[in-house]
Length: 253
Image 1 (cartoon, helix red, strand yellow):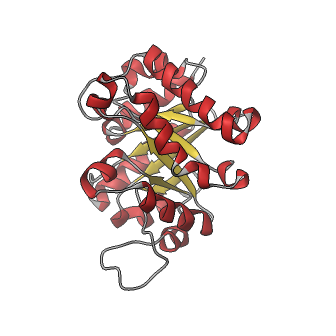
Image 2 (image 1 turned 30 degrees about the horizontal axis):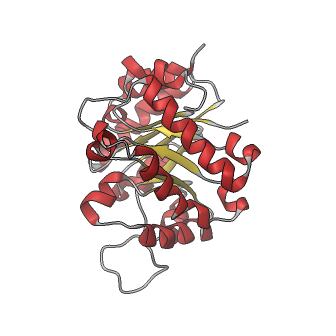
């Protein structure tokens, strides 16, 4: 049975002390949430360590928002997957639309990062999704399929079993727009079908696919009720304890 997951991507927000307080707030609400829901927070690199220390024993995992393509060396400003793993991180977000858009990340880059993530025992949260122009042109299926084929299809079946996919309609990120529950289900089901053709139905059925476009307490329940939506990769709402808890509570019966 695939995992239900709510992951908070804090992006470039919070100073270290603020991040610790946010983590404490999330941890305080964890006891009200079923253990069947995996909770993950992804702070900035600067306070991964302090957040990990704060969350020890809380049953909340910590992830990084990115990692380097290389193992080590003269790569000023980069943070390797080995460094991230040494801190106690369990997850790494890869291929987020902001990384693709602002920093020119390509499938070639992401294949290198995937290699590093798996080499260090981390679980990638791999992001796919289309922008507004691609959606309006009816190319959203083709875009997601290409992003999966060029990176995910290079994984072994064993590696793939340790992968989370996040669908992010780029046109809905930070815009207040949200895919309807029907749109989310349609594309999530399509992504699962693409996976099934490569890795088989059983593997596809056990793959968690998260929704990542302006998910908030007011729409989370409707989105998560879809059979192929297994949770969310949460941006802005993850910076509020109340909003993040409200989204997690969407999994309550």
